[in-house]
Image 1 (cartoon, rainbow, N blue to C red):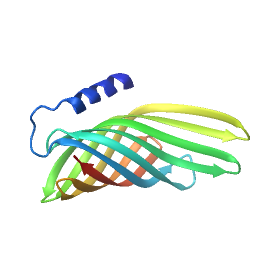
Image 2 (image 1 turned 135 degrees about the vertical axis):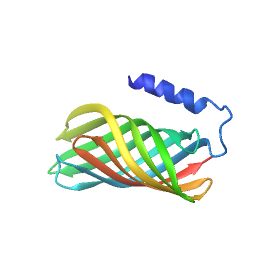
Image 3 (image 1 turned 180 degrees about the vertical axis):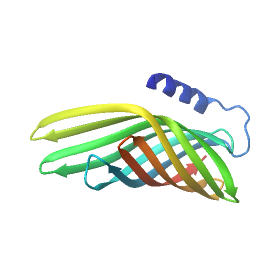
Amino acid sequence: MLKKLLVAACLVLSSTAAFADDDGVYVGFDIGITRSDNFLDNYASMGVFAGYKLNSQLSFEIAHRRLLSFNFFGIAVDMKQTSLSGLGSINVAKDFDLYGRLGYNKLSATQSYWGRQGSASDSGILVGLGAAYHFNKNFSARLEVQKPNSDARNVAASMLFKF
């Protein structure tokens, strides 16, 4: 299923038919905080993403993020997220948008303890809500809350550069 979604995203990203003025390819990075019901603390997250804006209301993104990484009494835990999603946005002020995200993501976790390693993965629906401020037509900042699975939340601030 993920392969089919990735192929569809590549086709959308590679198509350069005539769209509105604000269409185009963009890239960005984010930093944030992940909270999981399975762990006691909040953990720093960071990621990168690339997308294609079809028009002022619809975009598609592919992203990779390190959701959390920590060491607890010699046990090292690392969790990553890879996602493909669509964003629907609405302009609420001159340079300010609100948007919703719906997509598919794969979570992978690894842990190691005294040279022994284990891993697990899960995949499912990704949902999110966010706000974006456009400084100019090529540079934007976003703040978003994502729910990568039923027991985790990520709040991230991102910078976006459009080509």
